[in-house]
Image (cartoon, rainbow, N blue to C red; front, side, top):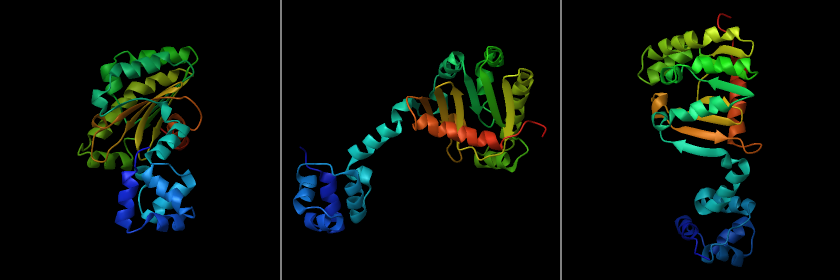
Length: 247
């Protein structure tokens, strides 16, 4: 097995010997020596104590522990990642929404790129709703201080407020369908979320940057407590705080 050079360097930086580290975490000195000389990985609980004693990041010293945790948390939910929304294929959204049968969810401030890139998007949502699919849309409240602040942060001025109003013009006529709900929210939007059954597209937001320049994550739910569920819970939390237009 390979020598753990990161652990060796961390010991030197901390001015500690393997024996001193062993004493600090409560293991046999030979065990701590093997962590360095053979690259053996300690039990996660012990690794936490060792990293704390060395004032180092556990994921840096033993990346395999963090990788294992990610697998347990459901990082297999990640299908693809794109550096910006502009580089993500629009067909990814189209396919996800077209395949949805049970639910479609949209949490954004405006995201009128969907209607600009896909002129029949409203027709699709209506058809899905008529077929029994639940469609929920949350748009930014153009009159809220949060929206104005986001425009200032992104150096977009009042543009984002105008886009929120345009988005509402697109979606509000759809509420004639019994399976389509459109609401407004005034929450700080950390991520735009688009859901279609067990698939999800997350547009991460970056301070001072318009959403088209921020990363995109395409997720597919593979089990409980994964990335998909984390963002789905966020969607539901905002839904509880949102309100129908005019209220």
